[in-house]
Image 1 (cartoon, rainbow, N blue to C red):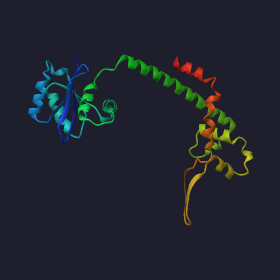
Image 2: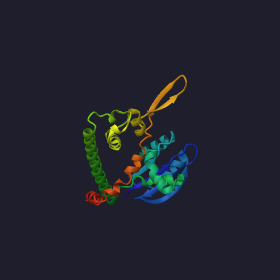
Image 3: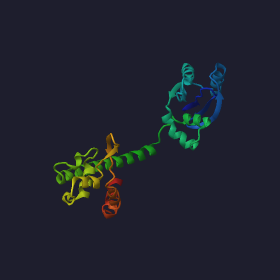
Image 4: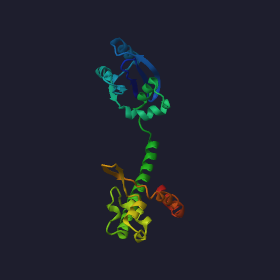
Length: 241
């Protein structure tokens, strides 16, 4: 039998506690102060045959949790501290984005529940698919890099700041024949590989690349999956096992 006491620790107000047995709430919203009389009354209400069966879950709020944790430890209970980040997702589920101390103490009482085997199986299946897709993306990136190396052996496009192999391949493929441009300035203006300039009569500062000249690449890439519709079902079948 798993006994859990979730305590939402307050700094200037009353603490709130929720007791759960095997994941089912026994009582909730019990208010108390960090005073000996309140703590002893709380301990008597728990009516524990074995104090070691109790798990107390608290968030380390300021320094207010220290006295509570030490008091329950001395009485034989197991104290577990969780960060706010760990309980944030469960808090959103219960409170629907509304802060509530009563709900906070309840979710803390539910945190130690064991994981479900079905959920673990689903996560493992999704993780396997994610790993498969990651390997595919890596292979495609390597293929793109090799094709770009054949198209631009000197690596002129990749020499621009902030441009990697994949973007270089997109730019090189979009430019096509570079001799159709009359000057290097025309290529820079077309691709957007021009630094932002802040200029006045006495100073000139060049910062990051504008990347403003080749916006049409995004629009050109958008319909690409429809042209490859024949290969999409096969890839879906391979990822689904």
